[in-house]
Length: 422
Ligand SMILES: Cc1cc2nc3c(=O)[nH]c(=O)nc-3n(C[C@H](O)[C@H](O)[C@H](O)COP(=O)(O)OP(=O)(O)OC[C@H]3O[C@@H](n4cnc5c(N)ncnc54)[C@H](O)[C@@H]3O)c2cc1C
Image 1 (tube, rainbow, N blue to C red):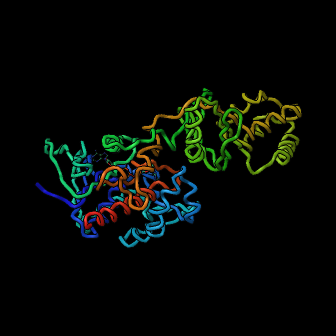
Image 2 (cartoon, rainbow, N blue to C red; image 1 turned 30 degrees about the vertical axis):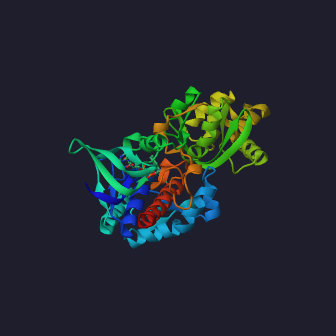
């Protein structure tokens, strides 16, 4: 029977960072991954480019999390974005900072991030076993002693024993990447409370059927707001993309948590799109008046060409009730007002969120109240640590989620080593 100092369950960013760091500090470490290769989800992040962190200052960085700021202050204080950038640079991975402080590998390849992490783990002395699915924690006298594993390659069950176990199994979104919620099951089986999981950063389904005609239309520089029971709750500026089911894109993903919570409470939710956020009502009215005057003998659709992408023109005509072939000099001031209001408040009724399997991140997870924020260790079971998305941590898009996975993973790895030595 082989005995390790530390077993890490899960070869995502949290698990790889935990295992590499623990091994680097001298602990006999093994990482167990159920897929035939590590870092599957990591390799598709940031549309394959991996936006692994953000250069915002800590106070502003924390604002992008949903109420987990207090918990994350410790792991971020010991290993933050500048440390992560240095870490990758020292491993030979050059990085670039893009719009909004988003940091990517210079090669624009998420696979390069997986590759340097894997090499670093091996160089540090960590053992990696892939195609092995952890089925259960072995607990004796309120202390974790090891894990039961099914080795898919050898088609047999096997047990591994260790002084410490780190659970870094991720959430439940994109289950084909391996995150199928196993960590919640492990945590629950030993008495941990699981905050109910729900989709975060998820596309939305829209009632209006015309949305299907807008599939793949990408709107840039729009101001999108969420209205719950006719009260404005939150807004986001940037891009919105129409899909075959409704809407997605950075603004929608950012607002989706607010939408999901409101829908779960049976509220009526609307998304308003301000298509001309740079123009206030007066300026927009002046512009419309000028366009109409300059194009008196042209059809209404002609001036819409300068205001909207072509796919939106028939929708605008339908929703404002102004026929596309009406002459501009016949458009009344009432119709002009309707057009102005529509351009500022293109409104969509939200039917539902897409399923959690399509969410970028899982909200909910192991209750942070039962995890020591200075070590990532369980407050209920000795020698057990958690890291990454298995915890009740979720943030906006922008590199925050991966930084949280790396920082909590690093802290778990370091503290697990201290635990082994004590
Ligand atoms: C499409 C997409 C794009 C994203 N883009 C970004 C981005 O650009 N920036 C950003 O900050 N965040 C992004 N995210 C979110 C980010 O990928 C996650 O927050 C992050 O991967 C969580 O890391 P983790 O290590 O906790 O979990 P995961 O990455 O999910 O890794 C968990 C690992 O544990 C393994 N595992 C699970 N159960 C077991 C078991 N029983 N036995 C053995 N192994 C097991 C899984 O196979 C998996 O490899 C994106 C997510 C998605 C889906």
